[in-house]
Image (cartoon, rainbow, N blue to C red):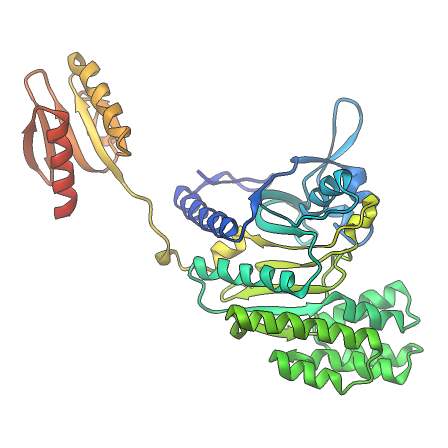
Length: 415
């Protein structure tokens, strides 16, 4: 069952929804494994200090806090990348061998938009040790492969670079409040507000020209990169463009380039991203269903030097954008066994044998009201004198288990 519950809404049970969620998560896990990733998990409860001491990550006001019996402040897991990186860094100041991990875990936030707690399931990967563009492309290709596995036909991956905007900021003498406003305007591609804000600031003309161009640096990767190269970029910005170009060429080799657009105005609120960043959009969902990027400096917070990249997919958002008709619907009960009380031993023994054959079986004494009986594909009636297999009101007696299995197989073939 899938239970939706918060302090203001009634409990809602949706068995069909959790069935679809289970299918999606199984598909994602299988795909992670084909790329060589091993499953891991982090604790549901984390120390508040782990996040409080790190700026530019999880909004502290969104974390759900509690206090244990020693007085230590804990939070329900608001993020997965940070604790995984901490665990790796605690045991490895540097790593020689690449590490690939995946997870399917819940994260907990109290959103600013709604006064309620939100529990969401994330499926994601973390790839430690490889700083090459080939690793970046692998992560994006994996994300695309996941969406294809769950039959999402129309989607786009927006590819950007955290370093591009950070390098621009380094060229500007800008206060934090103005910087936050500028980020909002760039994300909204609000050209008018960008120009007005820059007019108020002491910004060099070359930098101003680049910033006002950001809303237009979106679309076909090669065209956007060529357009950006005409701007007065410094050496670091040019290197950033080359990095995106290198990643895109590997994605072409993967055969997934048609799903890629470049957005040089892409900004992620997680400041630990240092290089390539990306996000994925699908139809019917107005916000990213997956987000990720490279965070080579996050391990520095734990006195380690470990390059890393990863992404996380929001299962609930993904489910909202998938046609349920493309998923396998819940199967009804295969067989309902109705029996006289004196035949209980033989009836339950038969049920166990069928379950060992992966048959979905329910059992009821024959005095049970029919109103309590769920719908089944077939039924079996066991009395003192005989056992009967029933399919669409067609009754067939049987005496052995092997004979029953043949009847079931024949009935399934006819249906």
